Image (cartoon, rainbow, N blue to C red; front, side):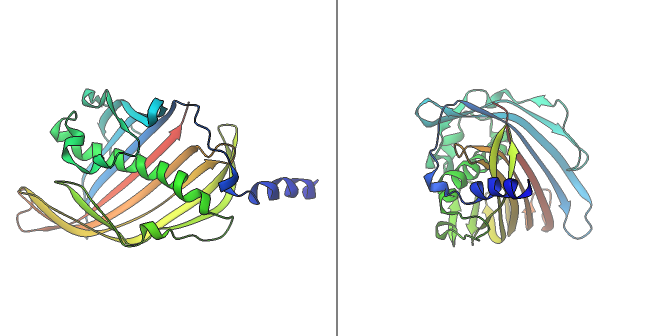
Length: 261
């Protein structure tokens, strides 16, 4: 009996992702939760803690994606499950091409209220990483064999009037299989332990480093992401009206994409 079970597992672990057909029968919907907190980097004292909940829709005709039902709430810490927050109607109808590099420009976000554009850039870039890794990197993976994509080796990502993120590397590992949403999925872990990040505007400036890690559950039937989670830790020196003498801060983010439709 054990031998038969192992034989079934081996069949999935021997799959080559490049031979799996990508099936786009969307639209697909993901429940998205983004939590973040700002801490004093030395004392650990909490300065603020917030959460965004919303729905990300992908697989729309002509490679469009959209956001809806986005809300903002205060939470005590990252362990707390957000409750119904304040609706953010500025995100309703926020639709764009899935791989539009225009997301790096300020004009891309003109439909979003200025005070919410930092959140929009987080959501757009997190969704882009989730789908991008599944579509462009998964094909290069083999079970239990580490992979470091060359395209993310010393690669700069610069947002207009926002952050410049310098990707030093990303390490990925297909480490196992699981069942989710009634599909057999590859468990793909990823991490990057040092990436310079900086920002300079008229109102604030900061410079520091980002490290992040997480995992994705990618269907071995159609290569759709069924579940993804990432944790990011950014330590930086901030100079602004609130911190004119510079303050060493620790920004921690947790984001989850959970496919529900």
